[in-house]
Amino acid sequence: MDHLRTLVLVLNQNYEPISVTIVKRALVLVYLGKAEIVESYSFVLHSVSQPFTAPSVVRILAYIHIKRRLLPLTKKNILKRDNYTCQYCEAKGVPMTTDHVIPREKGGQDSWENLVCACMKCNSKKGNRTPKEAGMKLLTKPKKPYFFFIIHKLTRIPDTRWKNYLFLT
Image (cartoon, rainbow, N blue to C red; front, side, top):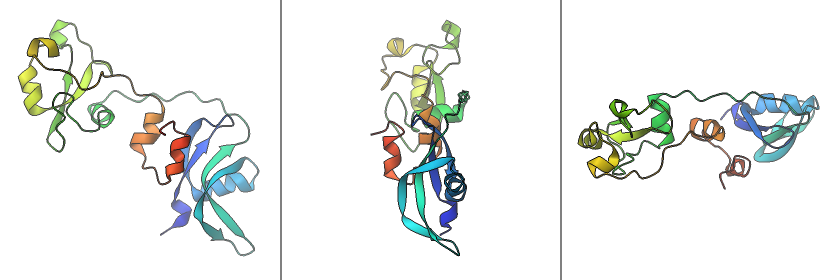
């Protein structure tokens, strides 16, 4: 395994997660005095002259103002948000699509709050009706994902200690 390419969570000075990098880049930040190691992996890396603890989580020492990246509203991101689970019958592992909770014909918008993951069977059953009109109930109320969704859903979490910083505990 190439330990230098292992993922590292990067925190801002205030411990807010801002990105994910690799061990090699994180060690450079620490070596240059721009970051400190907050959590470490159990393995050690060796240079010619000294060993280095492999960081799992690093904190940038100077606060960085970051403009939040917006997660695009796409079918793929709706399915990921809903964990590829039909929001009407809880089906998993079957072909999925997105469904407008309030149909477009009734004023429903393309938005995080109006689109859900649905299996083909439930989408057909609901048709151009609201869930109430179709006698169906949503498992969860759809909402716009928070920023940490990007790191949590789109990146595998190699160290359970990351959850403390991603508000997932």
